[in-house]
Amino acid sequence: MRTFRHVHTPAGLVLVLVLALAGCGREQESGSVVLPDVEGSWAVESLTTEGRTLHAPDSARLTIGATEATGSYGCNGLKAALVHDGSAAVTVTPGPRTAMACPDMEFETAFAKLFKGRLTIDRGPDRLTLKTSDGSTIAMSPKPPVPDAPFTSTEWIVESLISGETVSSVPAEAAGKARFLVTADLAVSGNLGCNRFSARATGDGAEVTFGPLTSTRMACAGPVGEVEQALTTLFAASPLRWEIQGRGLTLKAPDGTGLTAKAATAVE
Image 1: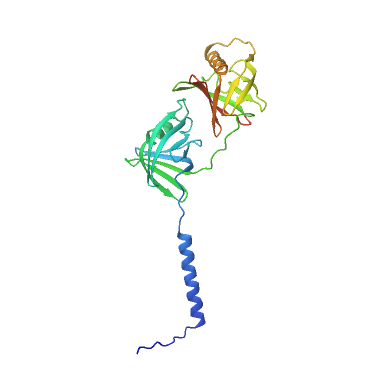
Image 2 (image 1 turned 180 degrees about the vertical axis):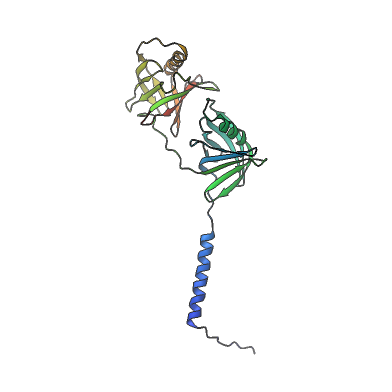
């Protein structure tokens, strides 16, 4: 019959073994990396394409959802339909985008070119990289969602005018001048680009109807006058439907005309 002998293990050796095993467990635990979910809000950091690296403006971002992506190429807004292949890839179908003339059009054009079709996904602990079939990349880092500005009690600076599928930036002569504020009790005031105006409004959910405008009567010609006429016509339409993403506002009439605006900062 086979017998086993009791082997005496010194207490010191037991302690060493226990500590070694504990240390090994800690190493495995610290070595495990939790990768971020693909869905979320991301700051675009850079693009690599055609042997070049293009650094992103601070406002370039993507919010990736289950079926849709929204965000900004840096200046112009974007929407796209998404079909996820788990966390390994995503197929992007670009949707409507604004078409303003922006300071860094090279980056915006490259971003729009890369963010479409099937993109493979490389996840790191603090980074998400989308790769095209030719090896170009969109590098991003986590970015908390920008809280939506309230429609009322926010001064909105008009950035572009919408006519159907066409979005045109306001001319330089009117940039920063055309703006409006809707107070909590729906009193409206602002500037049409040349003349100051005021009105009363009524609201129902995400719809608002402006009453007749009262304005100063300066003669406004050229591009400023054209912006003024467009805004006067828009505010007379009803109802207008508004949508806010972060600090951006889209206000549209039933006929497809409208505007985009940004929330003014304290220094604007």
